[in-house]
Image 1 (tube, rainbow, N blue to C red):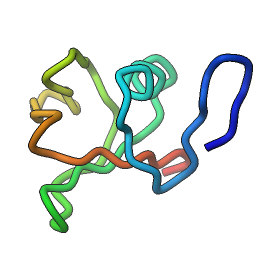
Image 2 (image 1 turned 135 degrees about the horizontal axis):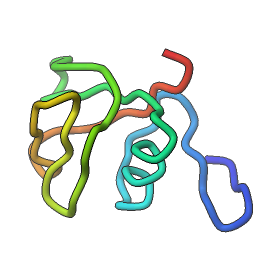
Image 3 (image 1 turned 60 degrees about the horizontal axis):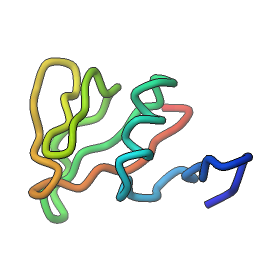
Image 4 (image 1 turned 180 degrees about the vertical axis):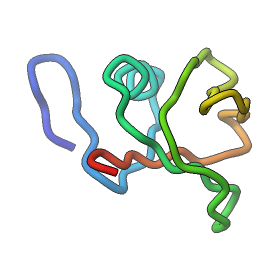
Length: 74
């Protein structure tokens, strides 16, 4: 992770773990990959996020069941 001001920027391939990571990716339309265990499920831009769920282009994913990986530049 690199630090810009008070915002920690994730590098490509790092998991989104904090709510601010999800908010940052949502705000700047940075793509994410979604995994269920080791299985790739989806890739795209977040369209909504709250403490429990992340919406990726109309599909809701539980933040506790899925892993979200930063994919800037996709």
